[in-house]
Length: 318
Length: 113
Image (cartoon, each protein chain N blue to C red):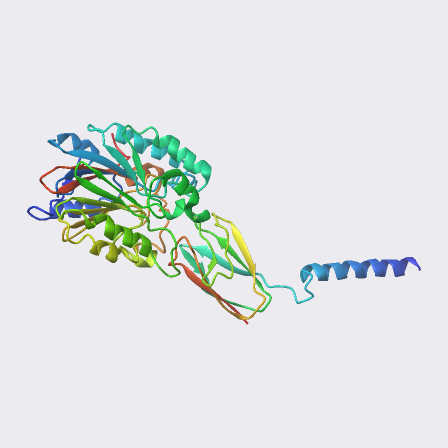
């Protein structure tokens, strides 16, 4: 697949056709190009056609690797994670880093974390950043996850960092979940976030990543975060905010003012589109169709344009 | 003591042991098999009414892990992987609400009468 979708919500508006294509295009990987305000999306194979200038960079997003899952439609999720890594390594432009938006493991087992770490060591990039999914914190309130990936983070694993003029924020919305609720950030994290961005100029491009969607996609299936609106209120004054999530195992995008929301595919198994099945959970698809529903994302940043380009690509095809 | 007497005594002992086993030593009536199935990210039935002393067994039929956690922290299962079971006895009457701590939109209740 070599289709390319560009989002230009800060310039002359959203590329509506591309937006709709993306919505319909379940199961691709995403390459994020930060282009100073514009989020665009294209297949990994189309990435080489982009022009690069000073300060431009790319990073990749993988999500929901569910190492340890052994059911239909994928009884070898380690293999498909390896394929995703190979896709990243084959990109024409090496990503500055990779983010994993959670559900690294299926059952939070030490051996599952070990396998994931071993596979992701193979990514040709400087660093892999993580945020936990609910499957990574099933035991001990997520202590094993924090011991492995939470070094140097604030509170229970949240953190931020700056990269080439872009402010990145990794949030944790899978701990202390309340009965009947959705994802939750919690007051401690919200206070931290407010302070974290308080000193930044409004022109600083912001990228937020967390496991569960920070927009209400389908609350009946738990696809949302209870206190996301509070978090987003702290980001209102910024000219370019990109929110990257996983959890729903399919691509979905929404643009609201200066905020672009995007969810990535899983590398393990697809889930049904909202409301199209009795519940969420692994979508049983024929083996020959599986890889067209798994994938990753590549993001590119281009300075002075003010946005990111997000490219979803699947594990299927050449 | 003749053979018939011994036979009757042994037979009675067996019946008594069987009765004790069925009542789990409590001396109460045998428990009914009360079960809640976890499937499609929901508890089925979502509301289960049982008698005092009943033991409820949850079984996870989903391909993702779930938990059974009392909203008032009266009981909590370990993480239940596919086909795992969790049993909880209810000795006192009342309404016991619970949820899945992994997927908190999943809620259920046990009414003990």
